[in-house]
Image 1 (spheres, one colour):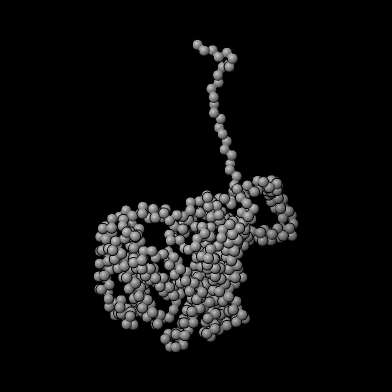
Image 2 (image 1 turned 90 degrees about the vertical axis):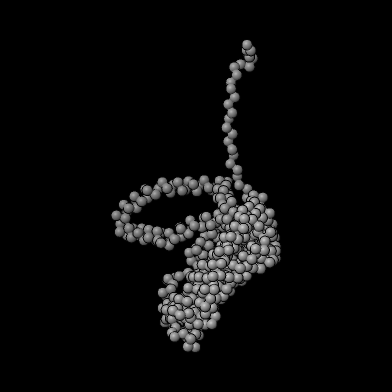
Length: 503
């Protein structure tokens, strides 16, 4: 028996829990300054883009945000390549859409475009891109979703750390605690004094309604919405300028992802697509006289121009969507695709694309026939624009089958940007109003639909007024109906010119 007299009784070792020290965020003065700017910019975005599209002011908001982002990136050591300078120039140009048009639909589309293109600009500048990414969809997912949300809480962490170091933060806490304590007492005393004095009651009542007015609640909601928008903007900039903390986009990973999706035998694809192609061919030949009558300018028996055009568009939309989905499935899921794409797979892609192009051409002819008899509307313009874009997409698909190295994403992005610029800067409502008035005066239209003109924004009203199709009284009356009092949407070029001519 071993007695340990000198060391005394042995006590079993109990491991003690190690407290992990919370990691403090690292940030610079530049990041702290941009954190403050993000809050201001986010509130301006919510107020003047989401709530009130104010034309010139909305343009200024976007220009200020784009400029601040570029300055921040350059201060962080990012260099603007020629490609990124062109991207920035495109964003600046599209920022002026809010100032030149009063069309809210166009403004909303432009805001979405600037949001997506702006996120990609940040990604492209920080990556040092010299051209559009070959795998653009992967890059857009990282730019819009992965990078910003990976550091979504970084701004809150920096703000909290900054306040914890500030001596005034404790004073602010004490002030807030004092206000919370005194609120119940203040309410009781105020109610007693209001019962004792009518003048004070009136004064406090007016103060209450001025504080808790609808505008105050609107501002509060805007501030609450601005908080996540600010965190998103700061997270985007922080993630892209701290590239050691993110997973950069690598072409090899994109290729591996695409290869992992190819699990369906090509023979299965051919078997699945062949009946569909046969059905399309049978349908086209059985309806050949119906479709081709548009090219001759004649209507099939039993159809009006409206029914003929609308039915064609529904058919076009359904077939085009089906064909695009089929082409996407063939390209993504076939085992042999990409550079290994066999002739048969290329053949199916070309056949489906050509068939869709024939339908698009037929529908465009029918639409032209419809416009010649009934004039233009916004829906007809937007649908025609979409059909042109759709046709160009299928043309690119055909070219891609014979030239694999063609950069599909780059060409599609350029084509879409150019077409979107035409749509935005042409001010569609002004063109519609002018075209319909000219058709009516030339005798092609039986009557001029003034109600349609009055439903337009100031773009259409200004064009109609310039063509002497509406009077000053009609213009002013419909401006008051379209816009609310002190409406912020009226700060644009069309509205200002129309106001100056109808005063």
